[in-house]
Amino acid sequence: MMQLYWRPEEIYEKGYKKEDLARNPHLLEYILRIRDILGAPEFVEKPGDELRYADNFNVIYPVGDPIFIHAYTLEDGGSSNYSRKYYVVEPEIPSKELIEAIEEVFAIVSGEYEAPEDPSEKRELIEKILERIITPVNREKGYFRQRGKRVEVSVRDLEAIKYYMLREKIGTSVLEPFLRDPYIEDISCPGAGCIYLVHKIFGPMETNVCFRDNEDLNKFIIKISERIGKPVSRARPIVDAVLPDGSRINIVYGEDVSLKGSNFTIRKFAKEPISVVQLVRWGTMSAEIAAYLWMALREQMNVWICGETASGKTTTLNAIASFIPPDYKIISIEDTAEVNLPHENWVRELTRDTGSPESSITMFDLLRAALRQRPNYIIVGEIRGREGNIAFQAMQSVPWYIPIMVRRNGVVEIAAIGSIVDRYFGEGEGDGEKLVSDLEVLTITRSMHVSFARVSRVIRHWYRGKLYRIWLSDGSYVDVTGCHSLIAYSPVRGLYEVRPTELYRGDWLLTASLPIASYGEPCESLEALGYLCGAALASGELVEDGNRSRLKLHISGGKEISIL
Image: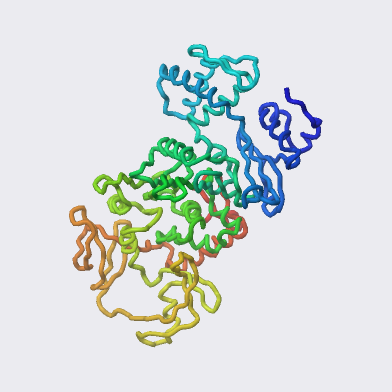
């Protein structure tokens, strides 16, 4: 029986609750074990922002019974360079011999049941089998004795056995605490040894979860990859997949492709998708930028989201997708499922890599197929190959009044591309080329940074020949010259180049066009809407009613001017 060297009042003063300690005796054991080394950890329900910039901290917080997380600092970092530590407090795993005895009987008895598909039903079945095969006895911790199809175990090991079996059978093994913790961004295992992570509050941390050697790590990687349906092998050592909670995992298997041995990295995503309103509140983007994106998506413009690794591209994509009208048909194309949309008419497509060109399905294949399905929007997770050719061709045509973002003499503005060029030509002045020094436009650098770049010259060339107006089935149109190169599509010919005069009614055309606005010139109305959107976002008048697909914008007097 454990002796308490603290008065109960002292424990409760640290924020611990009597019912939590009674329900999780391993937590009390851990506190008493480390209190003389690190001091008494403070118990918090959630690590708050006040800890974000703290040089020293020592707190414990729950991530779902029976798991708790102890986050603390060591001045010298201990045996590593990481001074910030992440310790998983969980029931002590029973001995290997006890687990093997339980597993042996469990395998025999489980054959009498039909395996369910639903996770909650699997959990109920595991608990039912454990209750059937385990006989609790009042003996010392670690005691067990197998008797046919039953195993006698100490009552002090019951919860630990149940936790371990559920974690291994339907959970994610040693990853379970990390996937439960909503404050983790990235999880990294560079090889045999400890797992590292990036915490939203505490930053980079070293954990107490470790793999003894490469053999131990390889067994785990093979097990987890098989569970998620993408088994690794020597022939296929690199795998990208999605874990049951939606996190993205990248696995590299074997010493022949990774000198330190197998490794994996996990990128976690919020269970509740982050909205644009949250991004504005956090300062990720300004209200004006959010309004600009709102306008662009309302008018069916093309939007590229670019940035370096872990810069928030997917988060931004999922957030601004709420701006796409809810009755639009959307097709998403990805290598790994990351896009999360609130729209009902959403077709979600994934690539398939079998190692054979004949049976693999690439992004290029899916993008070509998507063009046959007449979507309002196509969302491509990443563009890295020849599918980029189609994407760029689909965006090649833009009219005079398309607004772009520029910076002139240090002032950022949104204006029609044609009007920007016209500013550098005097009244009555004809075609020509002008050198400019005060104009900048947004560009993507070779290092994948988005920044303003200086424009050195603008060219205006008025076309005086015949213009062709091509009307599309959605009511929009595009004006082109007779020599304009267009990209058409047919099931027989695939993608092919065509001139306007060679088009026939019913042909499929890849183009980017702005729908005809019923309220006047698009650029003028966009500027007016942009002002209202930006003002509402900045003042907090944009509200969410609990459904990401319905964002309401109100102006003075409560008049609703837009529902997304």
